[in-house]
Amino acid sequence: MTEKILYFDMDGVLADFQGYVDQNPPDPDVEVDEIDGLFAQLEPIEGAIDAFNILFEHFDCYILSTAPWGNVSAWSDKREWVERYLGEAAKKRLILSHNKHLNMGDYLIDDRTANGAGQFTGEHIHFGTDQFPDWDAVLQYLLGDQQ
Image (cartoon, rainbow, N blue to C red; front, side, top):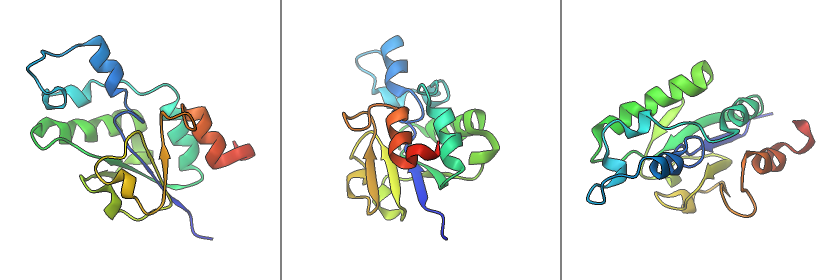
């Protein structure tokens, strides 16, 4: 039996981008995702790390994220974040792309439809919506009683 492939978006799904912005409002003249070092400072979303570890036991998991072109540190910040919070399980499983739909898999957990998420050929689990408001809802949907 082939393991199903599951992709996790990072910002807004695993890492709390909006929470950081709410607590640290940027200068209105600055594009928030262009702030040097920003992505290294994000905290995990509640339940995200546990959910990743649980789902890692059942799926072939990858982190599929977009990094802003104008923020060079974002690329390394995201890699460091994955290493810090997801550890060995996620080592070498970070994919940075502005075209998420080019990746083949069964599921993509993403909070937006941008950057190809809306055209993903597997199932887009739209995190933060009424159907999937949090990690408990996602785990219930993907695993049911297997948790």
